[in-house]
Length: 107
Image (cartoon, rainbow, N blue to C red; front, side):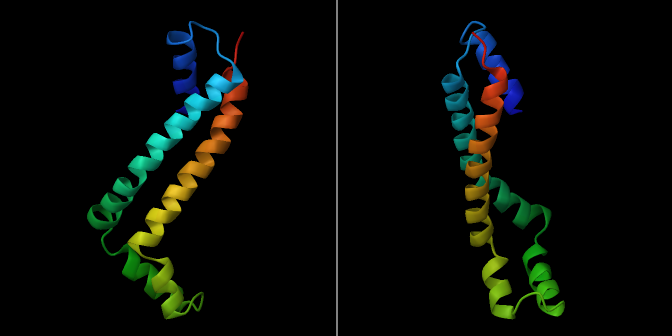
């Protein structure tokens, strides 16, 4: 999606010419938008699509000896997953933007 978005931005906004910096900034804006939507998607996934995920994940991790009950409860919960999703989406967005901007720049 980043490639298509940056190619479209280069073609329609920058009239076929885009620097690395312009591409990178465009990618960062996309990343921030994705990060803003991340908590909502995590909430929908955890409450509507798989409402028993957290209890099942806790039970499995404890039963398999991978974590203690307390550690599993601290890791497998809505707040933890929302924070992880925000950090992951911003971090990967930054990396993806840096790489994709290299390929879509054009003078």
